[in-house]
Image (cartoon, rainbow over all chains, first blue to last red; front, side):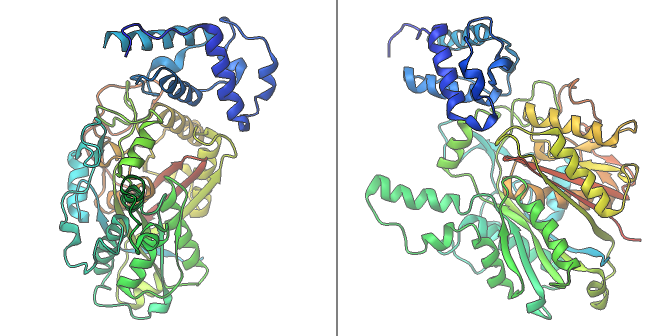
Length: 99
Length: 397
């Protein structure tokens, strides 16, 4: 495995967010996908919930071929915006590099 | 309405394979968590039933029966013995078996399909009979001779609470005189454990319901069985029953497939109270679903506060800190704990409670069992998929 921490960009994350939300359409949030999203977009306006986060972590692990130490009961559920979510994921990825 | 009474209890659990051992461990706050035998290297901690002692005298073989069916038969034999029916059933066609189970023979599925996938070997001829979700009810019927209504209810973590509640309805409707009710689960196979682990809700430390910093649930296995009987039938056999199965409420959230829902929880509890003809003020103790996940314990606290309104929520403990979460058997474990709490006048504690949590502002009977009169108590089960149940037991007057 590379010694570099995998890098994640806002655009990459937004693409993944939209994919997770599209794959779980039962939560009545399809309309939110039409909106323009950026770092300041509130997660609650995207229809994103804590369980989507579990799926994002799962996709990141598959994408980068890594394991990420994450428990859905921890404070990451408190992030409010897409930018904050991206920062949190970057921290998890960086922690992976240190480990 | 026909009154339904509790005639006998039986249990196979990680903290005891008879009701007294189970109860003493609960009161002491003992747990039995360790690394999963099926995944010793992965760091997944679970609560397993110790050894094969529970198999003694069963006369059944693991070749023919999945572990969940073995647990169920062992618990059913205990419960029938306690109900004075150990020597046989007087009218077997009037005795039903209604058990909860969430996912069938998970250990057998793993064992047999891994033969196919890794060794290109055929599954054993008994595989279908072992993995079918209804096998536990069938084996209890076969082992006890009960020939009345017999089936399994499957509603994830509410499976055995549904089974007990449906058993009450069958008895009230006159479809049986006795129902062997409860639930069983043997989910600690490698595949099932990793599927749960992928949800990121399993604690790696300890299951700490209602505590600050709680970090999830721990899976467990076992079975709990309650012999339910119409009061008239129990008295006709010379019993003097002391506990009534008084109320059952259930609801569906029609919401999220995994997230809990305060409205659905509250509605199930309110319906159970109405079914029992009780008011919230009559409940002295509540045995919570209390999984130790952030989402469940917060939502359950909100639902209790909403149900009780201006009145104080009575002492409410979760035994999952001791037992772990036995999924389709959890409701049966907890109904048995609730019944024993009423019988003994002691609220079992919430084990591993190490720090108060503002968003769980209830008296969760932290760490120390509490002697108190418990004339009536409720046991909650709230399952994935938004399936909610509440059972109410009370002293028989």
